Amino acid sequence: MQDKNPSSATLEGAKSQQGIWPEISRRTPPDERVFYPGEGIILPGPDETGNK
Image 1 (cartoon, one colour):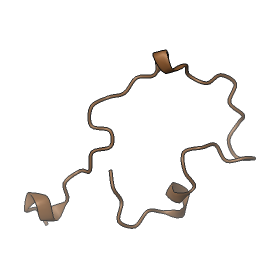
Image 2: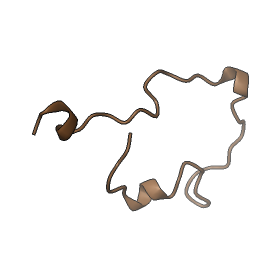
Image 3: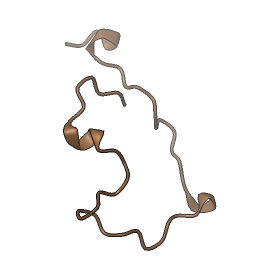
Image 4: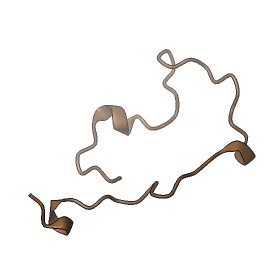
């Protein structure tokens, strides 16, 4: 999704924030990662769908 006005929390990124999130105990190995269709696709907004 693409946000025209992302919040400050969004701009922090996906990495854990020191002192807020616990340390990673085990990273998911690449062969165990699952990706689903639709990730990374910009969802249509009012201009593209005709909705207000």
